[in-house]
Amino acid sequence: MAFLVKKFGGTSVGTAERIKHVAKLLHEAKHSGDDLVVVVSAMSGETNRLVALAREMMPAVVDVREYDVLVSTGEQVTMALLAMALKELGTDARSYTGSQIRILTDTSHSKARILEIEKAPILEDIKQGRVVIVAGFQGVTADGEITTLGRGGSDTSAVALAAALGCDECQIFTDVDGVYTTDPRVESRARRLDKITFEEMLEMASLGSKVLQIRAVELAGIYNVPLRVLSSFEPGDGTLITYDDGDSGMEQELVSGIAFNRDEAQVTVAGVADQPGIAFAILGPIADLNIEVDVILQNIGENGLTDFTFTVHRDEYQRVVDFLQDRLDVLGAQSVHGNDRIVKLSLVGVGMRSHAGIASRMFRVLSENGINLRMITTSEIKISVVIDENFLELGVRALHEEFELADTEVKSS
Image 1 (cartoon, rainbow, N blue to C red):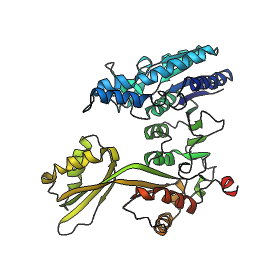
Image 2: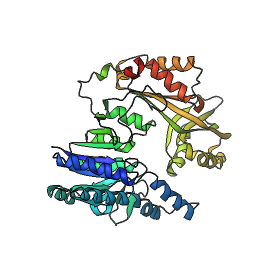
Image 3: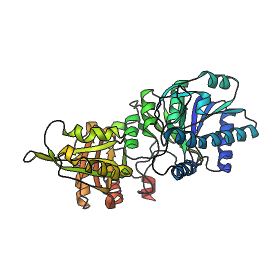
Image 4: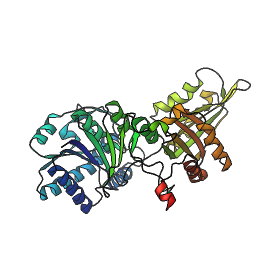
């Protein structure tokens, strides 16, 4: 018997039949003795449909308050249907919106952060033998305003609930059966990992892996919530994300996975003064626009001038270029230019801490395949390079082979 949070993503609840399938899984788990809190996303495609409607009503700038009121309704549909399906199977269930369960957040509409969760109603329902179903992705402010947590926010809802309730494990059910060494759609020999550390998963999520929302991984690491990724459609143990307990031989693994992000764009502010404060002069106003900056590079100065380069999400590229173009005189810069056809390719692994030469092997392999490196950034457990998007799949496959990450069973077949 265990106390579990189970989260089901949009593809898992994408149709009425799939919701019934999830209800059957929960019915079986409940009657095997588990106490269950379930977090659901909107049915696949529903949030996109609601966002499109919002854009149709307000093409320029959507009112963030009304946006949250609108897009939060998708999860409400799913939770009610799932509760109905469970009751039809004879399992008592009760559904709650983020407002009803009082998932208290700050006031940042569309990007809210969870501050507190009211546990008493959930625990009372659990005591009464019910399955508790909570709408993911949403919360409420102290003033009663509906908020949403950003794309993928249902993962964060699930982890936050598991942490607040002291659950044994938080299980994320999706359309893949775990975390792989890289995207199987790019490298067919990618191998499913039985276990990965919070650090590695955090890096992979931040570098483009779409399996989990980065905030959910971060929260699970802070509160030490064991996190497991499983398939809704195939039985199996999935991938456990936890702190390394020293018994898995992880130190012997040089590289655990290869992550990539197709949504990168590079911006260069050319000919700015090579002096203290220039980085803040460029990036400070961009931060004020709530635009996240990733890789940053400042060239060696020459004749008192330098070039300052950074990457942003591709959707923000033109906005950033236009904004900086209007500030050329303020910055004293010569020009602004960029490239929105780049990608970030990364190696991730805790084994990098104790093994030298990983970077040189990576650079050698990419060089041998004619792949030019535009930018490089490293940490203790990751090496990232920015390359032209045309070379992404070639780079992934070459590195996957170099660091022997392939599924050996597939390889030998």
